[in-house]
Image 1 (spheres, one colour):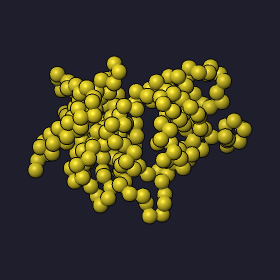
Image 2 (image 1 turned 180 degrees about the horizontal axis):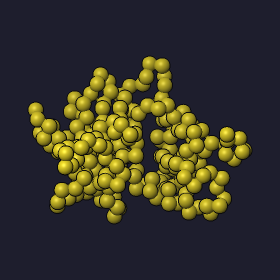
Image 3 (image 1 turned 90 degrees about the horizontal axis):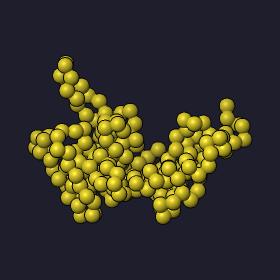
Image 4 (image 1 turned 135 degrees about the horizontal axis):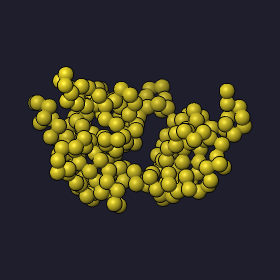
Length: 214
């Protein structure tokens, strides 16, 4: 099967599931970097669709692209300036997933595990059940949460660097991946946990507050 047909199948499956979930799906009138968009309470979320092959029990999701250039096609990866979410359809199991573009590293590839590691490791791993297509609705919650957290106290009252990364996560996901978020917080990332769409608690490294950072 050629790549165009594979891509069309993935896009159709993703769009169909979005519609079944009650989302308003929009298509660009002219060619854009994204395949479709969702209207989430007045905010447009740009979606790039991908077909995701399986490697054993792992789903391989790629945010890679080939751009036209004077020398031919130039390989690269999608960026947050172009798309908000990579929606992936895994034809082997007929399931769709939604991964925020900032989750991808420089390689442009993400590996979603369908089962736990044999050694019990969770930190640094991504699990398929954490990225259902319907969870894309949390993007609006995340944006609202970030705005409320930032506005809740003056910038001068925080002891963290202005460039420190900040992640907003729902309480359910936080409980499921507690160890992973603890390690991210220890590395300097601020974790904001929401409950019913509102900021509920903040997890961050204790070292900056005690002046222990090297």
